[in-house]
Length: 174
Ligand code: NI
Image (tube, rainbow, N blue to C red):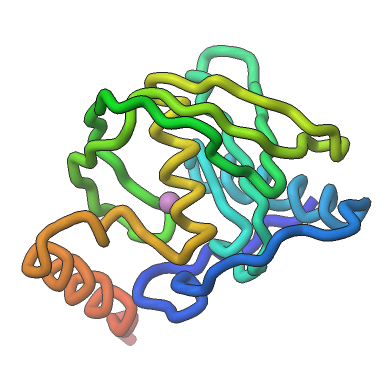
C-alpha cells in the first residue's frame, strides 16, 4: 500500500467532477487500499479519490473511534436515493482544507446506493455522523468543499489563509 499526497485547497483538481467507475476491478481496489492507508495516516475519517488526484467516484471512510476496531467502508459510484428533511449540524473539517473547521448543516439521514469493495451493489441507511460524512465525501465527487457552504467573506478568508500557508518558505538558520 502507498500513502498518497493529499491535494489541498486552492487546487483546481479538487473542483473537478469525478467520473463514474466503469469495469470495476483490481485497479480500483488497489486505489481504495492506498486511499484508506492515506486517510489513516492523515488521521481523517473520510477520503474521496479526487483528493489524491484521481477523478473517480470512489470514497473510503472509517468513522470508528480510535480505540475501537477499524471499520473501513468503501463506496464506489455512490448515489443518494433519499434524504431526510430534518437537518443536523456538525463542525466539519477536511483533509483538503487543513486546520479549518466550520459548522455545516446537512440532512440528518440519507439512503445511499453504491458498490462495495468487491463490486457488489449495496444500500445503506445512514444517520448521524455517518450520514454527514458520506454527504461531505459525495460533495467531493462534484468538486464541492464544505467551505462552499459558508458566506463569501468567510470562504475567501479561509482560502487566503490556505494560500499563505502554501507559499510559506522554510526558514533556515545556517
Ligand atoms: Ni473532505
